Length: 304
Image (cartoon, rainbow, N blue to C red; front, top):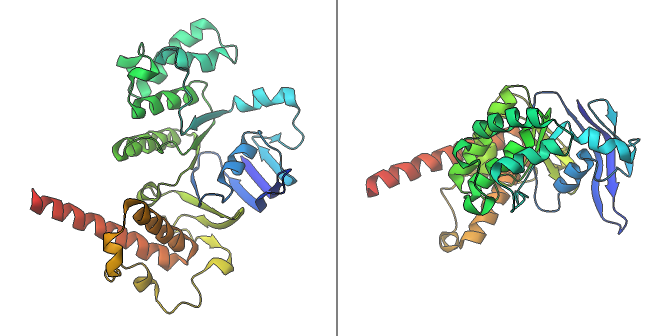
């Protein structure tokens, strides 16, 4: 369904965003795309949406050759996609209903079909009682649900979610991914770019890891698949075994006083180290994450 073959992208200013990327995504897959800032995630999405074209290599999506696509064909191609952005991109002067209906009107849908389809989709995302509200009257999570409804309303075969949980609280993040999961189970292909490694580890889905524009890991650990990795990114020449590397038992004393930003960076580094390590490293990481969560719950119960 989606094929990147030897795709590289170099921008006019010389920035090398992607390097020899080979990715195949089947119809009905759910794929997380992760990587640090500057890894190439945004360029990967722009190429899929045909906002950019590759410098070398080829991209095929649903039998569309994106390299040879004419400008007039792009709107028709994008009708196959529903796109969910981190910043929602709702129209502030339109109600929930009209924000969702707008996506159908721009593709020339009949008003009869709009009146039937829009309430159905708004109900799917749990906002039937907010259909006449404006974006400023909604919480961040509710606004993201509107954005998701807008992505769904044209029966898109592919949902592209660009950091859809970045501006919502943890509980709403789970609800959004659960909703994407249900859509995926109904046959929709879902590609979600995220920095939220707690969501990646919670949901047993395929994970593609980008680093400096290259695919350095691709697979799903918990389902038994082997992560396909570049050997240069494995945990080699280390004095620590994987259990020690990802254990939280012997943290340096100064880390206990670290700020939230430092902790977030350390957590991210541990997550990427585990993904870019071997499969045992990632399994140990997951076990420690689960153990930490259980200990936090027990501590919370004792305090209450």
